[in-house]
Image 1 (tube, rainbow, N blue to C red):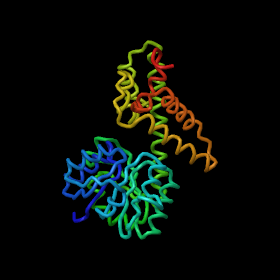
Image 2 (image 1 turned 45 degrees about the vertical axis):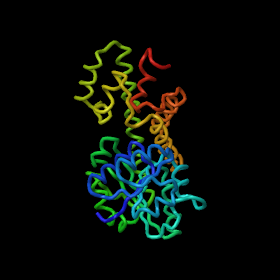
Image 3 (image 1 turned 45 degrees about the horizontal axis):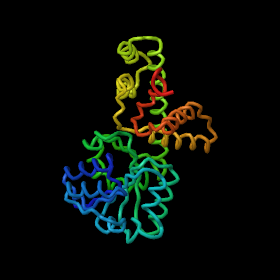
Image 4 (image 1 turned 135 degrees about the horizontal axis):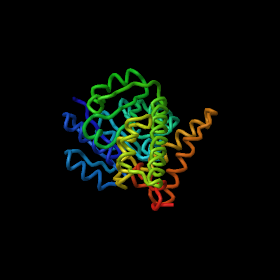
Length: 294
């Protein structure tokens, strides 16, 4: 555990991953976030340096995790000019965990190679509790040798660690995982919404769903929340909209018609338009239950 580790993006996922690695004995050397107070608070908690520049993050650590919001933010922290993680980055390893388009992971790899640095995708198919407990489902893409080198660290974060393939392929798999999950979420919301409109007992209906072909992981995580309107955010509707868009675009680029993915994207886009993007993805039920949002 000699590696010095840093995090860029210390929201609910990145911050809890940093806490987990600290608990496992790794030195968290530096943290950085566009929202400086969040980074300052976590730095104080973990005994890390709160860096004010991206270049200082790279200087402080051997392995840097990035957990940012979207493609633009990812390309921004790996900018080819100005303050950047690429400054004096030769020999550094960047593990990029945000849900991004595959082409962005490929572009970041290109930029990193240009300065002698290494990248690895660490795409996550889990939520906040798993980040804190080290039980993430991690899908990795990049050089197999780099994956093997980073495996001792990654195994502290994941109980289901999978090497997928070359850079960009982990992002493709993650997009498909979230596409199917989001379709299931929207479908469950419609089923429960229609059951409510028909006057059915929703506790009974959920039990029947559990015992039949309507069962799903989403039913376990979101069904009761949809019924009770408890949309405390573990995976936001805004993220669901972004991820559904990534998958829909991949389908368009591949010449594949994805009508369910398209309809699901429209539902989550509508949530954003109604100001509901900060709700958990279970909040899509607000669009399907009578008497809630139109």
